[in-house]
Length: 552
Image 1: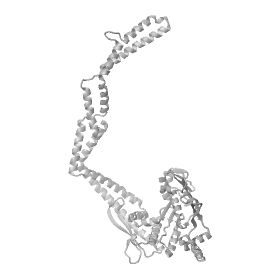
Image 2: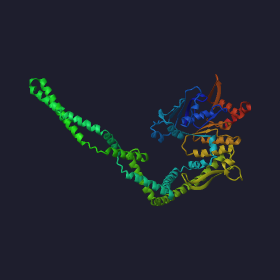
Image 3: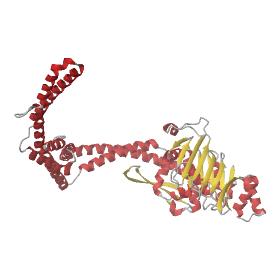
């Protein structure tokens, strides 16, 4: 359960600390006093979507922190590597910054908003006036029924078959094409395959040719340089080369090398230079002889590169990419040519899987219809307790083609008065009736959802008199099994509170402030009197408030 809430710089709340208790917690106050801000703050700390607009004017950041007690350990903590306190205490903090950067922490560890939202969904459920309106939308009725029935395994088992069926249908649709489209595609693929095959592409060919072209373009200069370098080393008809001169130098030095160590070292170096020059001359000769440049080779290389350049514009930036494209074309052509055979195989498989999916959809539909009868019984019982014993409630099923949710279209019908035909809720329910219907449905759904805290935000709209007393009794009954937080304007509901908080707005130095105050007996009596009679509190309204508290 939620034991404490700290709010800082959220809208008109500069700072507030609220200590909630088990059972029935009620928040009351004038319209606009800030009750919804408390609920918005709880939503924020649960990871719900929020806005920087919530930050109090002039503040750089807003902060909400909450402490929960008696929280059971569940998989979320292990999945997200968050430490779990064996005492069952859980601390959550969320900070919202004006610059758009915020942070979330659970038990001191940083988490994402998405992770926090996932945890929050297991801690609290918030029901507001918009939930009543959602009941009008028949698109939501099937999910309400499934939520009550809790047949998760049946839904998941069916969805596996339906997903497989959908994938097969996509493959079949891909294979199906009209004859003219098929002929056009075959012609196009055949032309592309022929063009690429006739090019006789080789991996890396374009890079090799580019390198060869660079060499060919400098062939004359290259050969001349190699020849002149070789002559400089080996000599020519009219001169000795460096090799001969170095050998002569080494010979002269060798004749006097024994005279001193310096001459011996000079001889050694001259001899090494002569050997190195001779080796270099041999290498240059072999390199010169290795080059083989034909007269037309450069033109041939340029022509081949031009062919590859034109192909690259259509089929890929490298020969490897063009060869990959060729393989894809061959595979697609083969697929089209054998499409009929493949389509027949898939159609057989489709019929088997369709039959399996239909069987699972029927099983799911039967389970839903059984659950619908249970839901009807439970809601009728709840509505009877909420002073609506004459209301009839039914679930109407319409069989559809197979969809991702099965073969059922579902809508809830009701009759508010004896003798009236069953109609969609939007056609027959008044605001007060819809509030009670919503409360009945939510109460039924909440029985087995494992969520320890429920928040009801002004769900009593349109309810008064005896119906208000019934709604109050129902909310009190719900609080016996779960912690309930309720924002209300009805004295009948507030009188049932285990803890009653007053939310008041004031102005100080040109700024608006909202304060949340827990009420003791006398404070509760005054607040109930205000709810009964408005701003004018009389002995009569005080007496009525006291009687309500005694009955509550």
